Length: 300
Image (tube, rainbow, N blue to C red):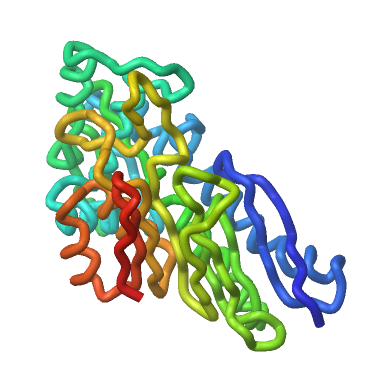
């Protein structure tokens, strides 16, 4: 039995299932149900797919129409509500509309007049939810509003994929969705996986290595999508109150039992700026972060 890597693409990211199997063919067969689950979640919740539940909610914004939710979608909205409270409103899944002003392929900072009408569409308080005969429903109050599950969608999919692999009896491996990892067991020889944390300013280097036998590791940073203009870096993580990119941290990595928890905590930390260390310590998770001056802080 050896470790096999099964590569695939999903959610605009290179992805991988690593597992222990007797042959490459067996590894692909075992990995396929997990891959199918990731692709199902992408179809169900991608904002880019008009037929997805998120696409239908966004298309009906401001119309007054209530959209029915299945248990999975309702649960994800419950989670989004919890993150909004936990982050003091900084983690807001309605803030995706701000990308209409920010094109990170082009080095241009939008004006205040461009951001102002978009900021008016940001606000979890404009998401209405109710239950009718026990069935969950949702609607967005304002025309032009959007929901975006991108802040935790990949991590949720990684957890679901790992659960499917475990349900098949697999006990060695991990799921890697664009750098967000859910480890469901050590290597075949029972040694932990050694996972490098990328240097935010040099993709060929790492700033640390973490050994993980189970749990999840996720990183949020200012180097994934960004541009530089007049010596200033502008990244894709946007403050929903100002519409401007965060600047305090270069990257934040969090080790937690579930990928969805690790990813949410790392993103909230990026949004909190200098207050992130207290938040991360209070979470009880292990973490490592590099600030905009290159200093490294951690709790491992």
